[in-house]
Length: 335
Image 1 (cartoon, rainbow, N blue to C red):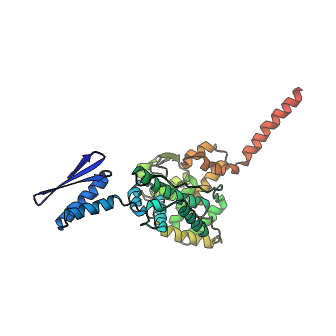
Image 2: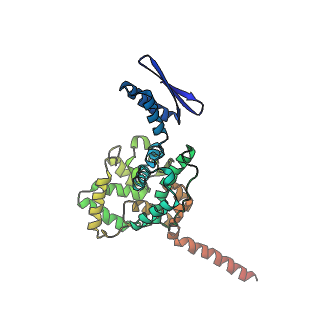
Image 3: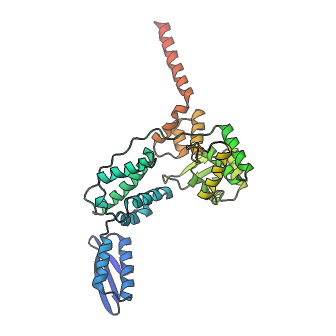
């Protein structure tokens, strides 16, 4: 290794053709390794050292959002978050300098997203991706201050869920068309509340202990363990060890759309695979399971996400009314 830490960065110290070449690199170990490899390659090609230094400096000071994205993309733990950030970079323009993305440009982006039919929630996810780029630039002193981001107010969110009879009908329609894999996946998803990505990562040898399934890698990078229903356990044991690893997004989309058409739901925009997660949450809440337990079961990072389903427990309000009723009656008798 021909680089070492020095002051606030790294020093390159390369020997080539009995000559010694030195330069200082600002940045982390990854930046130094990239510069080291680049310099050695260019020296072998016969590029003059002063040109190599100039190119390293240009690369080091590249403040385009495309260059910054290349630095932060590895920090994403979920593929969808990384894809959202990539899409935002492409929409802004990967060669645009991070310092040129000001409040006015952000407002124009929001207007463009909303004109394209994006919900406030979707716009906020894209704004979060931008904010991540700004934060990185600030830490590396590539940006003096972050633009002010005004987050959009989000509603309660989509809570479209399936009733048991709708789930049964939809799965039977899928099976009639030969889409048994998706039908199995839907049943397990409705019973567990696992996200699509979590279902695909199930490894029975590692994750299953009797009837308890541990979700090792989640969207929020937390581990949770749930107890499987009899039907979900039977499905997983009937399938391969990696039960749903071969269910590509394209295959799922094709099968799901087939079922939607057969069920007469082709115009129901909220009827997506994520409905299975809403279905699990709704059934737990409607059965009287405490909201904190539902939060832990679903792996929600904050209770705010879980509270979207609280209105589905009307009997809780009925029981609360009865408690108040009894207090009023008791006081009336004693007066």
